[in-house]
Length: 112
Image (cartoon, rainbow, N blue to C red; front, side, top):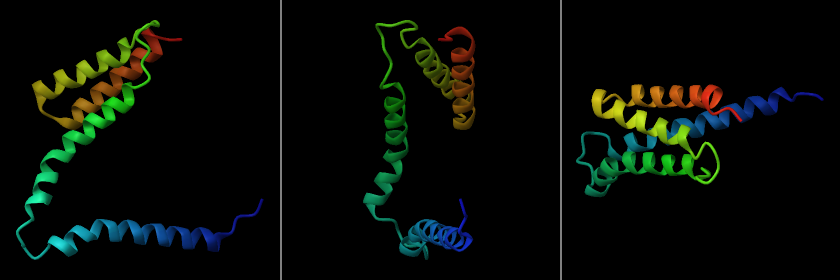
């Protein structure tokens, strides 16, 4: 198997350029201290929570409540995230604790 470095280089350049352009578009459209349109402000306020809800639903979609462990690892981890967020109000800490707690549970308590 041969590696075509030219193809890889061009691919990295194209992907990097598209990523940079996508990140620059909001500054190009809404820069220069213009007032944001009400639609953009509304989406900025509701999308973060909506995306998190979609991610949670996606993560728990395959839980089998009729089979051991009845989704306990997932539900307990979600509870840890909620409690940590309410108490500390630190998103990164909440995500870290929930992920760590889930990984510990599935590797120790609820092993298959």
